Amino acid sequence: MPPTVCPTPDAAPSPEAVPTPDGTPAPARDAAPSPLPPSVPAPPPAPDAPGRLRRLAVPAGVIAAVGGAFAYVGAVDPNEGGHYPVCPLLRLTGILCPGCGGLRSAHAFITGDLGAALSANAIATVGYIVFAAVWVLWMVRAWRGRPLRLALAPAHWWTVGAVLAVFTVVRNLPFGSALAP
Image 1 (cartoon, rainbow, N blue to C red):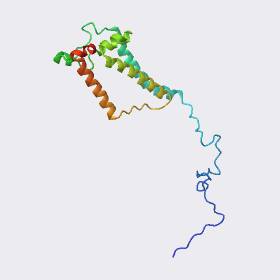
Image 2: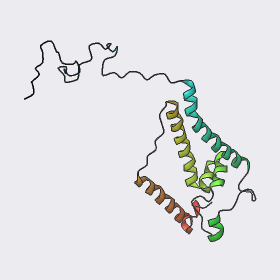
Image 3: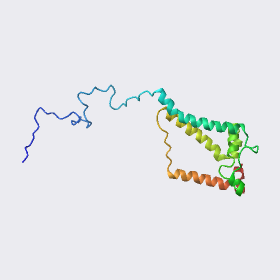
Image 4: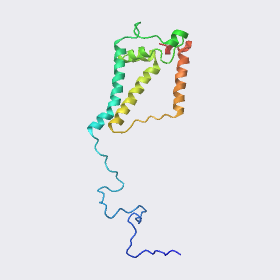
């Protein structure tokens, strides 16, 4: 039979093993006391400027590309023929797709005519506003050092698809001609 080891009176349990009266582990005896109470979180460290600029580079590049595209569409009017291709679905079938009128909508939006932008393509106009809001959120989160996470549930994607399908059908029917460009 192996010998039994009995604790000696001078062997004290480790400080982490002895809970405080409220049940939390006791701090180590050799650890420096925290200047803040345990319920107050420590302030985040100050972000470094080069790291912040690096995080802002992608959202800034995206807005530069989108801004360049909008500047081109604002300068070259899609209502004048010869500059932009015709929608292949419209040319082959005569059916307006959800994107038909999007360039005219962008041109009207960029020149400040919101009514014409909505009448050319209401979905695209709403999309410009949603894009701007998401981009601002992206910049704020990048500035703070947090990633942008837009996790949409499958129900959201089905809803977007259903809205686009209804928009496409209605704008191609006689009573929905107000939605046609």
